Image (tube, rainbow, N blue to C red; front, side, top):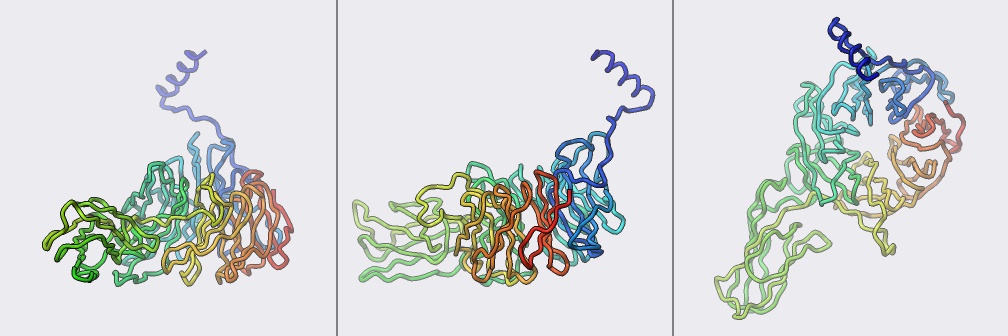
Length: 467
């Protein structure tokens, strides 16, 4: 039988034809693995379907009419790819109202699709690294809109040019040995200045395998913690010990850790035990003489110098290297939990309009973590349902909606008080959300049962389900 099939295939090729498996057209009135949705200016929802059942040989967009916002209805379908069995495992998207372009990550083909919503067609395909799962705006540089894609398999993020239709940079993320799996990113909406550094945009990237968040410099296209840059090339401090003097100085290097930072402590005259504390964060790399370095909780470098067999004398020095930062924000266990989390994964992430706080859905604790951007420190844990995934912030930043995939509920959080104010039951596997233009209705995609729920946010009730 196999020989017969091979003979038919060779005959078709020899005759100038190439056999292509027959595909079933995507349905105009059904969802299939919905992963993302965007509200268009014409009051139309575009829902991205990942073709999870592999029936249609293509991921596709379902157009949902909101002519009656409380009662969404099907209004057409657009295949994203329709070339034989070329399955596009679409993961996420971002719509730019200014350009009318929809950016779609295509995991199967390691690329980002540019979809023109005016023509309802893909106009460009941009190769990136392995398996991009989400995309976010990264700001405008010299008139060119940059985008940032999280590449979940290659443990890096890609910066993409809108004008050039190409990947500009790949930024590797710190790997602690178990991988990174970057999932989602949020970028400061405009350039900011921190610690006298040049104006820059910063991306906060959630990691799918550990309880960390990577911080990325968009200007320098590298991982970097903006709160603790390298210190200036002048003495950081002079500590006077009674009868002795120890001085520490630093040499500034690249602020994205391309080189280590050199520190030297000199002694005059001899001394006994003492502790010297610096004013930059970092991790000890090497050390010359006897000493036990450590990094304190407040981001300061500390080290203890013990007396050798003979006392230190004038002219002796202690030299070591540090990095200015690891580029990571660590999420500690919930106070009082006493044990490590079973699934320490950061997933969704949003930033308040004033850029003062970041909210992160944290699977390990079934919580939303609140981070103060002034010092990149965790300030609160808000308990929600099982497996919090996607989050949506209201335009004024006052209300946060959290889709809890494992408990089939949407949690509503007042961001001012940082408390849960409502819980709404939805379908199986809530995965993405969007608000109507008047913010009256919340639309929720349910990945597992292929439905779209409509919630009236005035009374926090489920009023309809599109199947």
